[in-house]
Image (cartoon, rainbow, N blue to C red):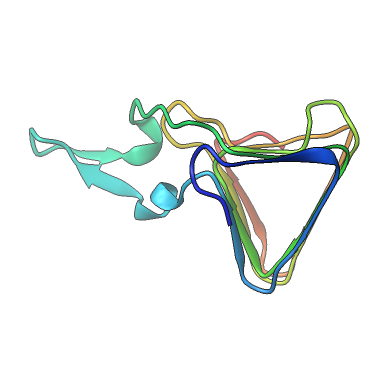
Length: 122
């Protein structure tokens, strides 16, 4: 639902979709790329600087979705409750210089098909 640079912010943020929520970029899914010199490089180690997206509720951030891919920020650091409920899988990943973060005073993440935290912060 978001591309790089998108912002959803308020006191209470509630998102419910049956499909996938992407906060940040799906570039993480490409896994690797080949540099001009032919070297195969893990894209999470590339020096990418993306305009960060955010989904932030200062009192509560709730996301109910089929799946989630976060390469940016969900929830406010040290503020409110962040609750994520997924029927599918969740990925919280860093890409380049951008760290995937799921934050809050209290953080609850449920995924029926698993949660993968790859270089990110929960």
